[in-house]
Image (cartoon, rainbow, N blue to C red; front, side):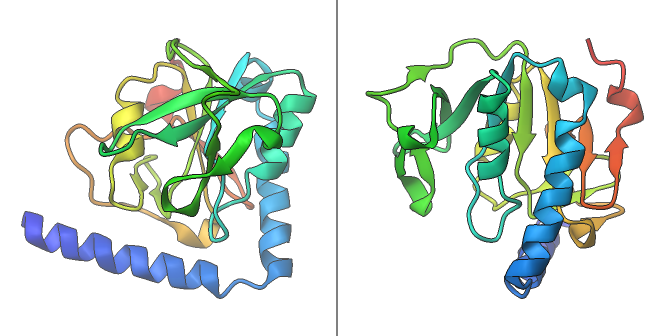
Length: 200
């Protein structure tokens, strides 16, 4: 497919999945978020992780506030991203509570650098990855800025995408350098990608 057509397809897919999420009632969203959280917290890969890397959710995303609280209660290190100004890169910082966050880029809560320690080691850990959609192979459709694509290129630990089942499709357009997640968690199922299952 032509690059221009792929770009248009992604724009249309993003619009569709945003519309679906915006139409969810609070009750529907809370129920699905809770089921996703339960499945994720039961993963062996989560239990075995010392550090949890996670995004801080916006209103249309699968909630991560409960996941952050659970990880802190489980005595894990929790690292969340801060966008580097004038770039499409992120830096992760360790937080000790939600009080360590402030409103930053795109209205998203980000770690307060003066209160948080910068993460320097991305060689392991468990990373919760956002996406408007994922496909059956673990590839994701993000918001189009490429922040997580750049981060995942250097991250060496386990990656898990969390997404509503209605936002998962069989095949998404992706580039040569795009990295699929190792595990996909929805409110209905957990899917481990076979080719990544034995990841060291």
